[in-house]
Image (cartoon, rainbow, N blue to C red; front, top):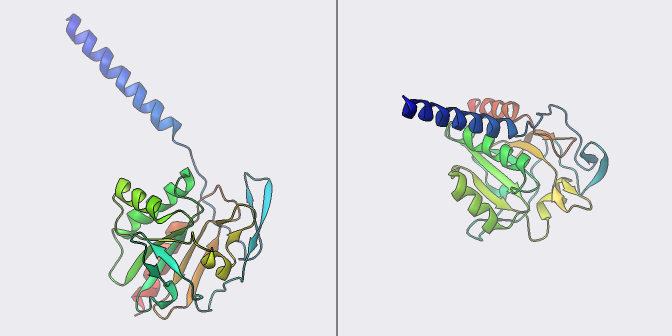
Length: 208
């Protein structure tokens, strides 16, 4: 009987630990608002940062820019015509919000129809992006780095002044290379509405 009591105590302790761990997982707000590229965003609800570069516009072509994949090969998103691009743009994969956003993209990517390509763009080094992909198993995502000259950030108006990171955003580009959806999250610590972006990508793909 003592053995049963001890076992039950151990089980109860494990459950309490698991509940405690779950309770410590931060709740990150999902923001449905958007600001214009080239405007401003906030961090922590207080500090305001300008967005540098030439603002990309819905209905305009995605600018030509050189990004680097995890194999250190140059990739130009504007040249990837023929597929609908669901592009998740994050400041750094090492932060909780960026990790959460990329996990949401990874889960969506596993269920996307053929013809939609899930892409993550950040200023992390390609080696860091590769480690993240290996650790999470989200290898359906094309990871691209803007680490060299921030050319992607500058050509879209999404480079955060002072931080020199990319503004948290999500973009959908159609098979002709035209930007059809863009949400730039006003507060860097909030998540974009990934469900809305995925739905838009699906709708665009369904028209083809």
